[in-house]
Image (cartoon, rainbow, N blue to C red; front, side):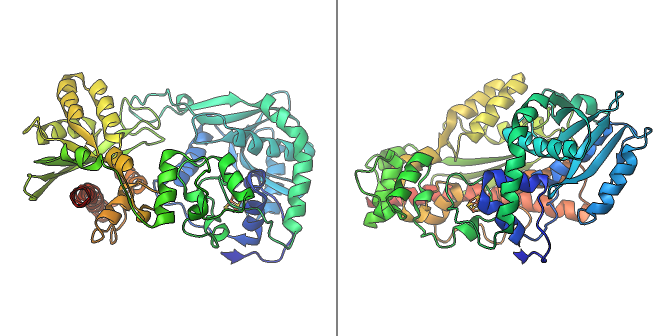
Length: 498
Ligand code: SF4
């Protein structure tokens, strides 16, 4: 983390929203700023920037204030100049400042009666409370700067839009939701909140807010705030409610091992507490029975899919799940493994080839169970069955063969090394210590796989990068099914030893 240069603190629309979530987050984001990182291509952050830029198309002849964030005074002056020019119908990244709050409004649109409309652009599909806060602080700053606002809109993604080819129809792609009333309802609190937040930024002491369920997912300061927590911190109990977390905190119980036996936990949480407190793994009597159903030849299947915010293929909607890859390991029943896979041609919609190749690969043996590690594969197959009715019977036969190893593990086993997670990465590693995902390049999880394929599908990767990404996708998906093989074998060994 880098230290801020010594200058007067100020708020932005993003830091204001962060401050409504957590005082410590606001304080840290000023006093221990994270270094800026360019969003990875295809990542949600990069998609958000892309969608923000595409929204400019809704405002023909709009003018961009292209000053950098650190050139705020120049940006404010440029904005004022554009506002005084009636030939400018809309301003992008318009800059204003009031009471220590510096904002850059996504779009400010000139109306015929001399007033203005504030438009906030989001890549989400619906209005959320934090977007209203975001727009409300901007409306506050603009109105306090003497600008007459007629309305406030959220410009967001219309998930009913279907791509018809020949380029995105942007007016159809975006939905404009009037949030003037919600913003008006939020406005009375803003002045006091801004004052409190500015006072907080001037504090030299880091606020003593404890991390816990209130923290937004993926907070940049999670590692900083949890550095002194034990590995069996009660927060790691899966699905622990805020109420129970608070009760444990009030009782000064920080470690799972110290939770009293009479504390009300779910069966899974209880199991985890017992394993940690007693140092003995949980192995159910049912494990041997459940695992016996997977004897003989077994297949192991895993899918990768993307949900592009801006549809790429004709007939798809924003954020529609588009499977593009499968990996299939097979154990012939004697321990001999074979492998098969499919990776779509990103130049066209990969879904039908995904389906037909999978049906062909699994056509040999209707009795062979197909091990998966979530309900995800079943969901994808159901969607493909509806999309391709000609293949529905074959897909239903595949669905009937699925056996979810996740359910078997979750019902029958808990090891301390799972560390509260039943993910295939944790379980595979725990059951087969020689197995590892280390060494993967470019693609090391499902989100990176989706981003990589999206980059290929949008033809954004030069040839050498494209071949690296394809190799990385194949390597990653292959490891996911190999992890299932290893986990299954590890489970068998445990069941035999019990
Ligand atoms: S991890 Fe939690 S407590 Fe720490 S800054 Fe983030 S939100 Fe606040």
